[in-house]
Amino acid sequence: MKNNEMDLLSGSIGDKTLKFALPLAATGILQQLFNAADIAVVGNFVGSDAMGAVGANVPLINLIISLFIGISVGANVVIARYTGLRNDKAVNKSVHTSLLFAVICGVILTIICEVLSGTILGKMNLDSNIYPLSLKYFRVYCLGIPVILLYDFSSAVFRSRGNTRTPLICLVTSGVINVLLNLFFVIVMKMSVSGVALATAISNFISSALLIFFLIKDTSAIHFSVKKLGIDGKMLKQMIQIGLPAGFQGMVFAISNIIIQRSVNQFGGDVMAASSAAFNIEIFVYYILNAFGQACTTFVGQNYGAGKPERCAKTLKVTLLQDAVFTVVAAVLILSLGKYLLPLFNKNPAVVKYGMIRLKFILLSEFLNVIIEILSGWMRGFGYSFIPALICIIGICGVRITWVYTAFASDKTFPRLMTAYPISWTVTALGLIISYLYVRYYKLKGFFGRKNKTEA
Image (tube, rainbow, N blue to C red; front, side):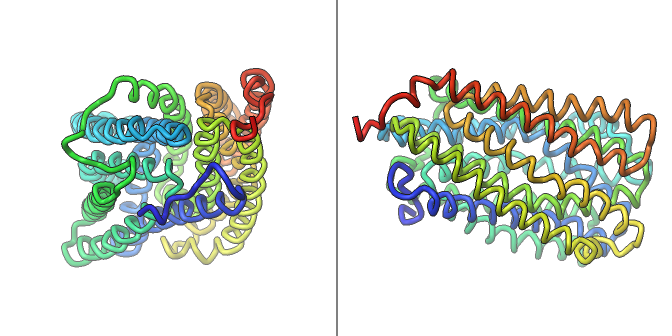
């Protein structure tokens, strides 16, 4: 496993950020492909209503788990920082604290979701034909939340050490099983949406179990032992201080998407299916740009702990450039193939038509998300998570809510609704540029005004 770890404190930055980000992007893309398999299987073997039911759950599920995914980012930063400080004891305490915290929160979250599932989905403005299917999918899916969080936190442990290959290997294994189980439960067992939800839960269990297995076999500071499980208050506090704002930032995106989804639901099954299909295509680009943002966070976290300002500054420039290139190329490629990809989910001409409308609005403005992800990730690496979170709350959620209840309310068309995305990204990107300048030249003035520790 140590062969997959990278020394982030010395040597070339550009090639290492690529080695870090590309497997991470591949992990996200493959994960989405396996999730898209859920949509494709029910779309082709059950129908548009089932497809819309599964798709309608995506923003809601993202909202529910976003907070804890954010805290896993906090775990990533804390472990990376202690790695930079060469404090193996603190690294090991952080690993066991984060994994136990993930399981406890996952169990609590599952219980809450199962009890309140009807009430939660009742707020989603779902069609009467889709609501029962959506509720069935949601209840089965939520049974797997503990292992989903365990996978996210375990992946964060490996990322903090520069290792993004091991989570990829585990995901590929569980993802293939997910696709096979989708086909088995839906086609053979006739389980409809509950079948794909059950397949997802099982595959998530397998991927998290594999990661824990590799942590047990690891002989470095991130070695996992059940006997050492416990919550270290100091470590958990640091993770929450950094991760909670990041989690709220993720929740803001999810909340804004739920608001958009509720408006999409007003247009009926075809538009719901189209939006769901388009989302499962466009999200590939997001995973690419997000991977470079996480690379930026991890590299900065380790080098900040090691007292290397020049590498922190160069990390920003390198990841921003690399992210922009990969994101633009991917966006153009996917947009040009959109009319061929959308029918894989549903061949209905109306679904393809509305799906292309969404793809154009999202992908042609996706470059703005590069600025948002890289600057947010850079500031989080130094422990400044609240500022980017606040900017995103105002720029993403605030702008989209305002747009839905003003511009869209006066002209209820699908293109008008989709305009909320590029406008909110523009406002947020501008806000983050200003906040970056504030953090870099005011809050971190002392850090960037000194030499690297190795040069001092």
